[in-house]
Image 1 (cartoon, rainbow over the protein chains, first blue to last red):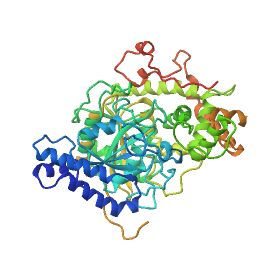
Image 2 (cartoon, rainbow over the protein chains, first blue to last red; image 1 turned 135 degrees about the vertical axis):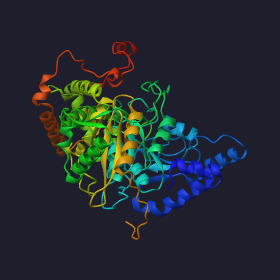
Image 3 (cartoon, one colour; image 1 turned 30 degrees about the horizontal axis):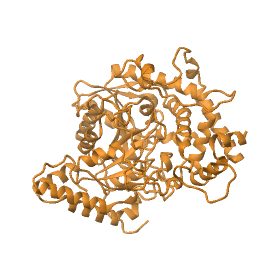
Image 4 (cartoon, rainbow over the protein chains, first blue to last red; image 1 turned 60 degrees about the horizontal axis):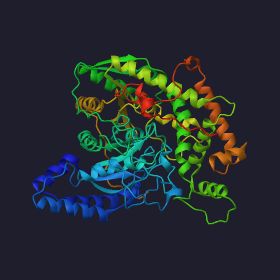
Length: 484
Length: 75
């Protein structure tokens, strides 16, 4: 798949039309997605109509919109009027939102063409996309491995070269971890940079929409269109987004507590190698000390289920969602039956845990502890970014893991997000930067984390890294002979 | 216990699930009760305000604006 820039240039030269781009994309998806299983819904007819409209407008001499004819896939928890949104939950099958998420409508306004919805862990709860009510998605680099999650479908369709861009969402690493597992860039913008309107809420004080792409410049092009204040989301930022910056006397921190949690020697070596390359390029890289990331994991585990249990109380099967056919005597029984039948095990467990956290009843108040510790973590980050421009760390403790090997029913489930969670809790921007393949041909990645509003700085350093290390996105668009 | 939790969550709950949640709470307790976590100062605000996530707004204004992320507690 060509990059966004290349697709725009070819359209400008008259080599290809928006409609032809969509037809090519459809062909590619029809051949290769049965192997990856990244999409749960495609909307080719609607996409072709939009493409035709763009071509006609241009033929009449209209300006080319900034993302004209660019095919984009969206995660199944982003609302788009006229098509189903299920969040890959049995509970929401058949639900059609009557509105479109701001992030999606802004891309459409910029000429992007939404071609379909991607698979995810049910209601964004999971790290492998095995918790979808439809089917698991496969890693495009090796079908026996997971693509990560919860935005696993969005990462896999980009990593597999089916689309140049996708939109994901994350609460605690659900963009960055699958981006790392699939060998692509994944950006968590500063909290409030992109409107959450139309994003199904999981834990509102952490949720963010962000792009995934196989090309750094594409990431910037799409972020530029999505970012900005939105009257439909009071938490959006008014401050203008700054463009990619060139590293100039920058100091990069390498937290030793994070390095201690790497569980794979190849990741360890790659992080050190990249740090050494940066130093050779004149960037100062210093080991720093931050609080242990397992502490952030505990804070996350005390806050997120609580917010989730509150947010998901609306899934009652009365206004929308699965409705049981059985007779019932009370509304309470009816709702309990709907939720019991419609929500998967992982979701139910997190709701129960969250409810217990909200209602400690004489036991220790972990939620209060978590909230206090979150503030302290924020203050720690603010202090470190007074001295350092960015933090470099591994993106995940291991590369992708085999399907069916996720830890069961334990807080260990969050372990693959351990390096992602501190930025999520503190609202800071962070970027997964692909860093080549390991000896098993699985992608490796590092993470860059920056102070509030520093997306441009993250992109600037990633651009330098691409140039000096020779590593970059690893999109696997070769066809396989055997279907999965 | 499970009956009450069933009402609060509007979910059917098996004993096995309760045991699991209890285990998770125990794990959480162990993770949050290290010496590092016993130093929480009492004057820290209990709830995160938006200002904790944003640096573009003076902290004192958040209460006036009513923009507080406060997780509602079940009673």
